[in-house]
Image 1 (tube, helix red, strand yellow):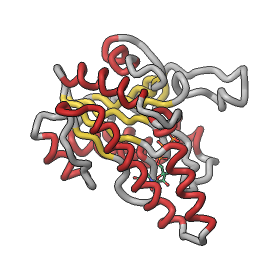
Image 2 (cartoon, helix red, strand yellow):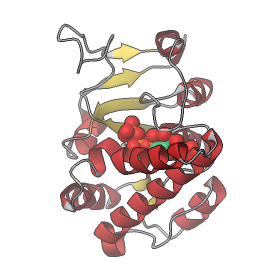
Image 3 (cartoon, helix red, strand yellow):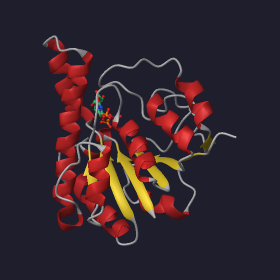
Image 4 (tube, protein in one colour):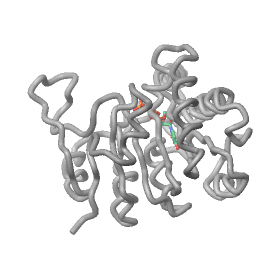
Length: 225
Ligand code: UTP
């Protein structure tokens, strides 16, 4: 099965050390024995720090985004380093390159592509582009909640939702470099139009990726009726 996995930077580089990269490399290496794995890595705090400095220097939003993209690609290189021989050694800069590199049979790891969206959008476009059967979105909470679980203790996790209903939930969020909510509008639109089976799960525990293959976990995005 062809699987695209997006790993939020807020997960993989949260502690600013090698550990999560190594833990992810172990799980991804196992999964790659049976599946074609393609990974998109986010920028995390490092990206936000760099974007903040660029903004203070008067950079435009698009330039801030471009600097964020560079950071996501650096994180991709760290994951490639952790994966060693299991990974294709180069970070694709676009989707056709990602497809090309995947013909090696190795795990392909990329970061961002163009300004004005998140790595979650990149993951959904990649899933559409390569015809992935499953998109796994590793984030910092257990799944999608009806409100921010870090702010509201009574927030409820949603087990199943359609892209249409997700769009309604996001309709009043602002879009600025470094501040996107997980799964931005672009990502949801792509998931909706291509009816990509998508699971949002807690990426603090990389083994959740394997669990999602045969167990109900996190939030399942089901196609619009
Ligand atoms: P992300 O916001 O996607 O990284 O990229 P992230 O770390 O996964 O996000 P969280 O914290 O885990 O939710 C970092 C920044 O890089 C730019 C955006 O400015 C984004 O906020 N970016 C990334 C792009 O402009 N285009 C891309 O394709 C990817």
